[in-house]
Length: 226
Image 1 (cartoon, helix red, strand yellow):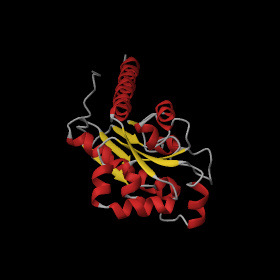
Image 2 (image 1 turned 180 degrees about the horizontal axis):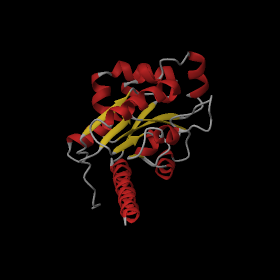
Image 3 (image 1 turned 90 degrees about the horizontal axis):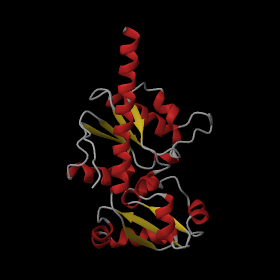
Image 4 (image 1 turned 120 degrees about the vertical axis):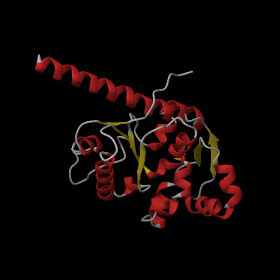
């Protein structure tokens, strides 16, 4: 069993698309962070608003702790006006004590490319998480039927990576919403149960990385004083 660190003394700043998974980790005692702050779901579609909300939440995080973990992927923020300003540069502008999970996007945080390749079995898949279904009206609010038709039907189906036993309950309670979303996408939606182990590992790696960086900084400060 992995030896996971404590998250006490840390603040989590995350995309709202992942709030269901992160709240589950908080509820089961794994994610014992001082505070968990969210931006709105689906802001990768609106980079200017993503920058605004992420910057605001990183500033808010400093009110609770000087150590912050950002749960955003490297591919979640693309600044067309300034291609050299990626999400890491955006984070660096907020000062020290901030580390981001090493993943490309929220899908990658739950299942890496090798795992997804095994799940897909050679089919073309549009990957979803519970948040993509629950907050679909927010995430896809600016999509017209033309963009939807260009994007979804080129895939064989959509697979929802379900690490929190979400799909069965949601489809039983709101079958019309699942059918509506599937009809709009023009492909079927299937759940695939996975664990939260990869996300837990990525979060834990952030603690280890930042603690190592802080120790090095203390060492350099001590050397300078000597």
